Image (tube, rainbow, N blue to C red; front, side, top):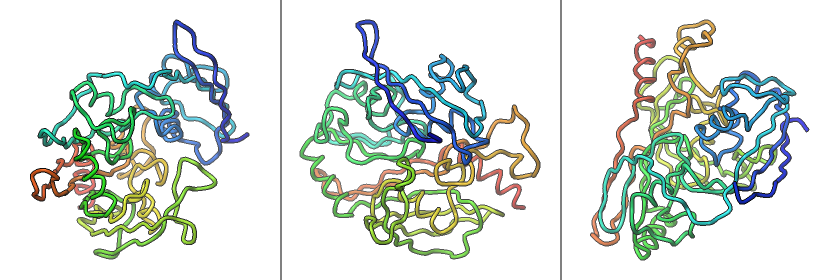
Amino acid sequence: MSDRQREEPSRGTDEGPEVKRFEFEVSGRHEGRRLDTYLAARFADYSRTFIKTLIREKHITVNGRPVKPSYSPSAGDRVVALVPMQRHEEVPPEDIPLDIIYEDRWLVAVNKQPDLVVHPSKGHQTGTLVNALVHRFRELSSAYGPLRPGIVHRLDRDTSGVILIIKDGAVHEDVARQFEERRVAKEYIAVCEGRVELDSDVVDAPIGPDRQNREKMVVLQSAGRAARTVYEVVERLGGFTVVRCLPETGRTHQIRVHLQFIGHPIVADGLYGRRDAVYLSDLVGGEHPPDEEPLLDRQALHARRLTIRHPRLGEEMTFEAPMPADIMRLINVLREHAG
């Protein structure tokens, strides 16, 4: 059952939660990746930090043996993961740091850090942005149910940047309508593989689920949902390009899929790109030593700006998150090596 997954739930006890057993074989296309990165892409609703903890505590084994998070799996390796599941539907508060950009009595703008899942799902109830929100704020909109208080839109786990949180139910309805009617302006910055030739263009390509890989989305010309992304080149840096993306729709993984579709996947995007991390040795040539730390080990995508019309103040407001240190470090190194 190469790369196909079998799930076997086990009954919880009074001393602990239910544990779900996942078992699968690694396919050849995933050779050379770190185990923690591979599993974090496979289990998209769990943070990489949570996956590393499971590996270190020997809840995840390879070929029946405990391994390190940095282990590089080979084709045919059999992975068994015992994942604890929460049995309740209330989100437990957790003291996770939040970078607040703006706050008033109706809404909050947060600069979300990478490796942070937005909301609990599939039994994963801890370590998410929602856990942090429940700890920080007394009142949050419940329009999307008990597991998504305050959530009106989302960012991928490893995408950093502006995310809007709603406190008031009536305001939630108004903001949700703005998203639905495409009246919210969103701006992302991405670092792409390769030299993007056109200074600007529009990618108008429908998106739908990949039937071969349930974790991915793909361009489906006949069966996908309409998806449109405007992009502009900010800077060309040797074999890489910094682009500004203005998505006009909000499909899952839209920017990542569209940039891959035009042949320029986002740097360090393990799901859609050519590699799941980028090292200095990748840029100067040669193999990287085992102890070399990556310049970037998550997709180089940042939600820099979001603009809405405030439902209560009646004015257009733009929330901006500064470029994160890891993506800026990559850009500065690329500038140096591009001459």
